[in-house]
Image 1 (cartoon, rainbow, N blue to C red):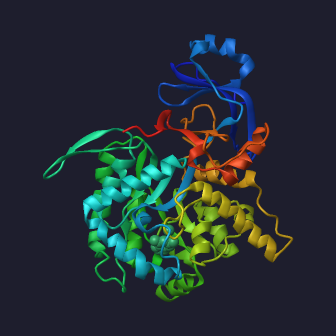
Image 2: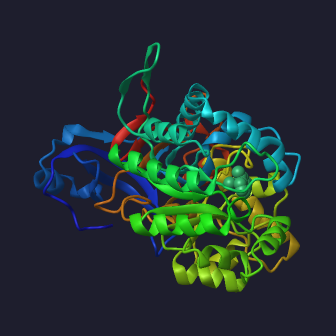
Amino acid sequence: MANSDRADTAIAFVYRGTFVHSTQQTALQILKDALLGVDAQGKIAFIREGKELEKLSQTFGFKTSDITQLAQHEFFMPGLVDTHIHASQYSYAGTALDMPLLQWLNAYTFPVESCFKDLEFARKVYTQIVRRTLRNGTTTACYFATIHTEASLLLGQIARPFKDTQVTLRRLFIIYDFGQRALVGKVCMDRNDCVKHYKETLQDSQDETCRFIKELLEKKYPLVKPVVTPRFAPSCTGALLEQLGEIAKNNNLHIQSHISETHEEVKLVKELFPESESYTDVYRKHNLLTDKTVMAHGCHLSDEELALFRETGASLSHCPNSNFSLCSGVLNVRNVLKHKVKLGLGTDVAGGYSASMLDAVRRALDASKVLTIQDPKYKTLSFEEVFRIATLGGSQALSLDDQTGNFEVGKDFDALRINVAAEGGPIDLIQDEEPKILLEKFLNLGDDRNIVEVFVAGRRVVPITE
Ligand code: GUN
Ligand code: FE
């Protein structure tokens, strides 16, 4: 167990029981009868063996009666990290999965996203998606919004952790702010030949991106950051990509986009950017591949392109539900890991039909099995490996692993309290099981009924109180 305790701050609460998490060395570390203390700043102050209770309570000054004991079929795991999700597409999640990507964008996505000019509509959708993802254990989400600055700012506000009273033109209403850790991106696109009204001019895209970043940073939400978001190369001119690369560099910001999701898209990028050696080279040329970049999909990247990811420190978001649903491709995760490219999991709502990261875990295992069916020598991913990608891997992919991703002392306490035998839940436990089996059952069979508490930066955000 980690033993560099932080004895300098007051302890807010302590849990005792089973903790499971990943480290750089082990995909699954199980700590039985552990004591975890969270300080007043929401950071993990200590994680030690239960037998050290007396000494810990003296060092940190808490009463043993303040400890919450987990039941036998309960455990804590790190919060799930969704490295790629379109908050603006949630209204049609679970539908519209009958076309390949480029047709799908024109037929469904752009018409819906253009509605986010309407702030009331935006508030409704964004409130629902933040609530739904939190209840399903997503403590960190990397969101795409739309091209609309005001609605994108609203998404940042809904994710952040305070209740606020807002006066609108005609009435007073409360926006319930949920306390999720989030990267929020105003989408940039100055090229869209299919839905003419859903695009910006180069100048507007640049100006509004700067305004979005400035206004979001001024709000000083501790857990919400702006992310520079060119939609993908086909919807941006080279001039816009260039500007966005500059903006990200000048403000030291995160960057997100899509890459190599389908063969048709890769072909289109070749036609639109003939001077570039590859799709990855388009982003690299415009300074959009950095160690704070996360690119969704990458199903059809070459080894040379993966090497460029590795070199620049850019990461990939694996979105298997979307890749199956839009028949885009199957990411070879082993090959990504072999190239030492940082990798997280994403739901990619609504190309992916489920907003739950548990679904992403299952689809990632399925995708890996498809590769094994095609080639029996392909080593299928284990559930422990996918667990790591969904938690620590995601935090690394978003360059947030200094703050979250596992239960290291000094990190924020982003955690899910899981009750595998929750009453009325989807899992029947026939007998007592070891923690490893409890985790495997939860990942494969569990749902939000098993997630009895969710913490972000030490603050309990589920059950949601309104
Ligand atoms: N590529 C560009 N935009 C999108 C999008 O909204 N969803 C997916 N899956 N791929 C994209
Ligand atoms: Fe996407």
